[in-house]
Amino acid sequence: MPMSIPMSHTAVETQQDAELPCLVLLPGLDGTGRMFTPFIERRPIDQQVLVIGYPGDEPLGYDQLFARVWSQLPHGRPFVVLGESFSGPLAVRVAAESPAGLCGVVLCASFVTSPTPWYIRWWPSLFSARVVKTLVKLEGWASRLMLRRCKVEMKAMMRDARHQVCPEVIAHRVRSTMTVDVRQELQKLTVPLLYLAGRWDLVVPKRSRTQIQRLRPDTALSLIDGPHALLQTRPDLAWTAIMEWSATLPSTARIGKLAG
Image 1 (cartoon, rainbow, N blue to C red):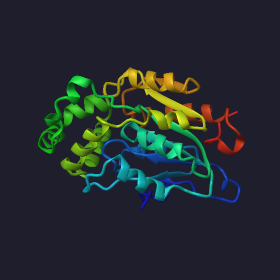
Image 2: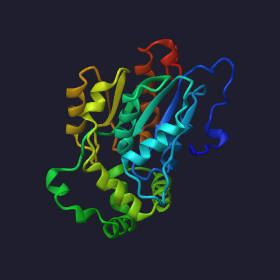
Image 3: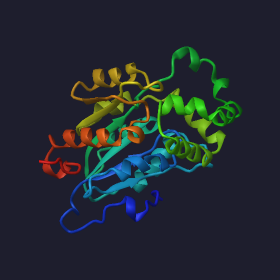
Image 4: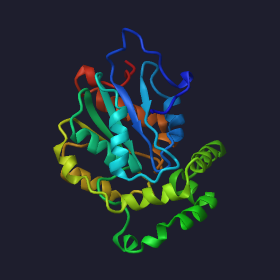
């Protein structure tokens, strides 16, 4: 089931905003959806969000996760799907199927083929469950890569999210990114596409977004001064970029409302 979001995090739907598009959030590597909290808390007051989380105890690849995501989409109402990092390929696959109601796609610090250098992909033992378990214990490295300089509370949020997921599951997801390829699906998209990039991203290289822009020259790009975890560290700037992009779309596809 979709992640249950506390009422304080979810706008109450009224007759007036019932047809505004819902923003469907697909999470990063941890898959819990908990890391979306700062982003959801800063959402426009009228904005509906739906977080689709992934099981933390099942080592599922992209194919299995796609089936889960598809079954939980808000079919029958307008929506925009946002794929963060690991989930970008899932967002692209969803959009390639042209589900009813889909208005657009947002990729945040993500990719359509493996962001890992080829010489590391030749060394799969680097991503065994044992190695991942050791890295999870070394919390400082993840914080520096994902969050750069941030508040203690945010580091704690990342730690808690990681601890909700088995190392075997994280390792399986990392290995899944090494063989993923949704370039053909990307070229099938018939809806607008926005890419949110962190200027200081140390996880997903610039070549990943360059590849997307080459395959889809009409991709809108928003380059934000921030690390890989943009939605956590720069939520206001991310919302502004999404709303400015959606303001160029038909009225039924617009996210939130820009002031003025």
